[in-house]
Length: 208
Image: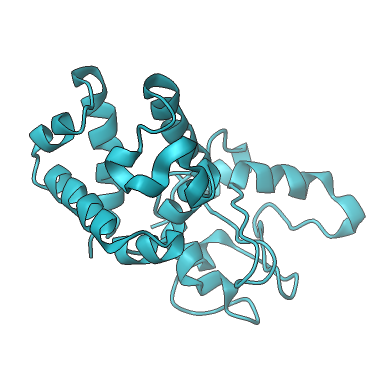
């Protein structure tokens, strides 16, 4: 199920419902960029170079430039010539919170508790505002695109011990054990937000 971006345009709103699409621009093995539909719509509306997609077919295949309807994304049948519209990372990201939302959440925890706070979740490599892991944006993208926690660990080269600790945190959330979160130093006032955030990942198969 694909969900909606912030500030949907009227036409897209009627067609899409609640949708968020992350576009991994350029070729799949190289640079990854996340773009939600509100930005994509703005790009389409500008009609620069005469290559904008029609609002009813707003998704542009990066390989061949074909424009397709949102309903054909992640439907099991490739519509882009290279099958990009069925890419597992794209389809996983479509079910997850927007990258910007995830990044903002992580930054808010760091701002409130200090640059090493996320060691409690991700281990020693999460020191210094996640810089050893590539920074907040890279971690946010990995959380959006990684189908499972194993994929997430591989993407960020987490140590096995740190990955298993992270798994235990997610399992505690899945089982409703808020005591685990409290033991990490998460304040009572933050428990609801942290639990809600982690549950979003659990509910989209992160622990599968």
